[in-house]
Image (tube, rainbow, N blue to C red; front, top):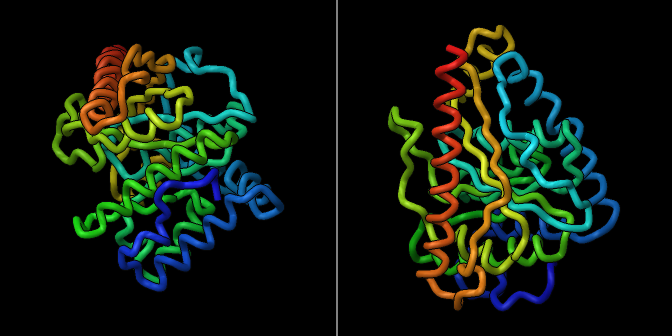
Length: 275
């Protein structure tokens, strides 16, 4: 467990299934410093990333890597990205791991499938070595669990040694325009305000959602080009010292999307120059 939480996912009186409780307990246990945590970190950086690089290397174009901050193993980093595909953050972290990212990786994920079916924990383990945590619940009756999960994420970031990838939009944008976004959700701002760690923005474009199509196009090299544009850590100015409130959190999230949008315009220029 991270430092003492005001609200605990497992102690709020909000109904959770046995499977949900079991997986939350299991991943939490792995987050405690020790042999299991060290082992997962090694697996995330090796097995968990090589296959992603293998199926994207022929298509990947990375811009702005010189803007990334130096990695501090004892600190944490939060990455905010637009959300076009299921694999946006996987491709981002695979690149970063190949370039020295030392942290354990976590991505909040919808609880549907990953936490409420027996196959979910297996996929979470096999695909990401339990990077997909904490669960985000879509049932409004369990919305309080999401706040507790986000606060736990912020506590882990404060503890140090974590890389968290998160989407200010909250869900995938499914239309044909990659350069506009869904409304910013306040949850990302809540984590940023509470965690006080460097926030790295990134814009990703070119991934497809079909797993087989993405793998096939990557291996053969005939899939759409994938462009990733990193920005400098975001300066939130006075927002981080503003009082905690949904309004403050929303403004922080909106700032993230504004910066990501600027990176999107850079990506549009890069794509036009290489087409």
